[in-house]
Amino acid sequence: MPRSRPVMLDFAARAQLFSHLAAMEKAGVPVEQALLGVALPAHARAALQGVQAQVAGGRDMACAGLRSGLLTPLDSSLLGAAQASGCLAAIYQRLAERYTHRALQVAALQSRLLMPAAVLVLGLFIQPLPALVGGQLSIAGYLWGVLWPLLVLGALYGLGRRLYVRHEYAPAGAASPFDSLLASMPILGPALLRRNLRDFFDSLGLMLEAGMPMLDALAKACAVIRHAPLRKRFSGVQLAVQRGQSLAQALANLDFPGQGLALGLIRTGEASGTLPASLLNYAGVETQKLDSLTEQLATWLPRALYAGVMLWMAYGLLTGAGFGPRLPVELL
Image 1 (cartoon, helix red, strand yellow):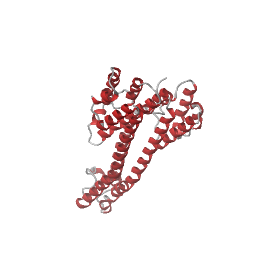
Image 2: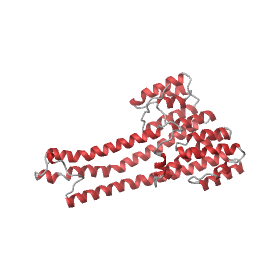
Image 3: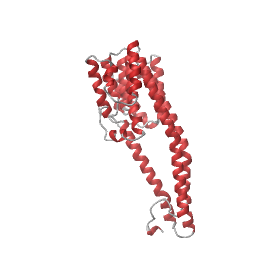
Image 4: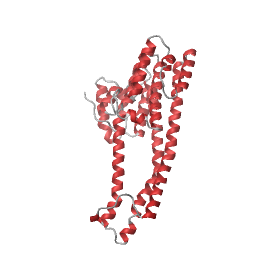
């Protein structure tokens, strides 16, 4: 069965979905019955019905959710690993917590962007007014001067959203032409790598904690890594462990952000027999670092945009240059 088009669920809806599935899984309710009580937005109901039909036909939740477009490849990979290791309820709960946190971050960022957005729109309406009142600008020219910047910003937002969806729903193992570009960016690059590493160590720790053999867990954890170059580098860890190296020795041959802390915790876990807990602790540390970075971006990005809008307005008022290129002659 071919994969359906991805369903764009916001973070709050995904958090609600996984929270419900976690509660039902802990209560021992079969996933086929648990899906009957899921409440999703109207545009996602067809995908939910597809999941229900596939689960009733014998598919597992990870495969059915991916084929219906309801789950991202990363969510599907994590659920597939959890199903194999018997820790499905824990992964449901972790995904619910992760999406809840991301929903709160997005809501906070949106609220902080309201002021610069309002100032920008106000500036677009106010700056051409002197020319309109003085007869130097027609009504059509005034409306064009207000609308074309908003249309450009809307197109840029739509393009960014489309690229985000394409990246999030890319098939597992597919190489993206943006991987190298994103990894080379000053702030987003390290954050992208740390996010992939966090998912790798988190899923590996959960699978080992559930009793899955190391080699099987490594193979499934590598599939969770979305960044193709990083996944290629980590694919050799399984072979190194198979040849007799410890996990710390295999990872020591790689170079990745946070390697020193990771190796220290892993060596301690291997020596004390608490490797799964050590891996989960490291994943928790990386999650805190990612949350701190996101909070800083959510704090300073609106301020930077607000300062840019104010500088643009001041420049336009002082020089009369307006927002951008001159209007067409026929609109004057």
